[in-house]
Length: 500
Image 1 (cartoon, one colour):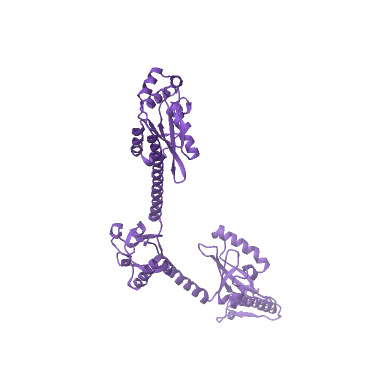
Image 2 (cartoon, rainbow, N blue to C red; image 1 turned 90 degrees about the vertical axis):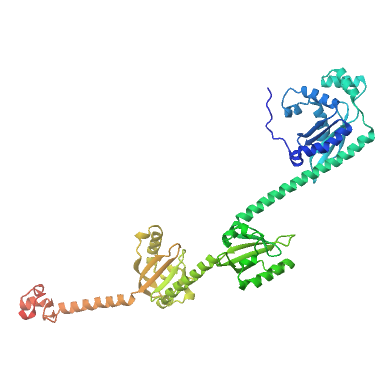
């Protein structure tokens, strides 16, 4: 049992021209010559096959019976379908490969004329026409009967019934066949162009509809002939209310109308004389104005233009709010009574305020973008800062926000500061503020030294020294009190001196 072929046959000629049109082209020839006509695709698939001659029809059926399969594709490949072998392999295929007409003998005793079908410069098929007269000699007829496995007398009967045509009729038919081949090629090429055009239009419409910007096609008289869904959203109108009904001028504020109208006219006189990109204010259905950035260009070969509108309203509001925020931030940063710096990810100091300049003696120009945070730290503090930085990124709740350290000033001296460190949310930047405690620490140190000197002086004196408050309560008594009065110094603390 033979299996059917699964290869998809070529249908370019058949799908482009259509069977009915091919039949109308072929009918004139087959009626004129009374033989056969076939139109082939490039893979040998029939686009059309017509037999009007009993001779051709009889031999085609006979040779088809010689093929041991019900599948036409397998029958074509078997080599036993003699009519197909003559018409396809002997004529059409050769003419397709050469790109030129051929006129060859047929196994059925007549001849086959084949013309290539050319679309643009590509051979996309062939059209064949049987012509001539079946052999009248008994020897030739016997050879054909044996080849096609048919009864000789029946073959002779069909040969005698065949009506021959004059040579000038056959030549005229060949010329017309060449014209028909060109016609079919032109139809196929037109069909291809139409397909490409539909595909191009489909792509254009998909881009037009799905672009993120509001887009419209503008006619020479300013009418909007086509808009997309984003234009509907921007304007508040439905397409049905805009297309071929509204001018773009209806969507422009009075302040911008004259300028945009001059652009519209200039663009159609000299496309390069009008800007392609500019800003203006758009009015929607509800009288709301929007800041728009527009891109306009002419459609080549037409007086139409395409405009793409980008709504900047929210962007401008955000930008204005950001500027206000930055101004506020910079004002606070600059007028703060605390020295402050901003450190970026690589530890470069990106911003300092005037209090930092006072604290360190460096100017902004000497620090911003030029010096690393580490430059201002003693060597022993750098590893600690690196550790804190890593923890602040990975374990922010485990890292102290405030701690003491020393920073280097321009004259090489170190000042004692308390730093407060915070990451700026959503960034890799850090803000650091400094409280200068150098004077306080020096005062504390001086106080400690003074207390130590006082204690040394008092405790080594030979007389009794006591400290009393305004009510006479003893808060301190020197050690000699034991030798002089016999009291332990601690026994007197908290007692009224007047009791003694």
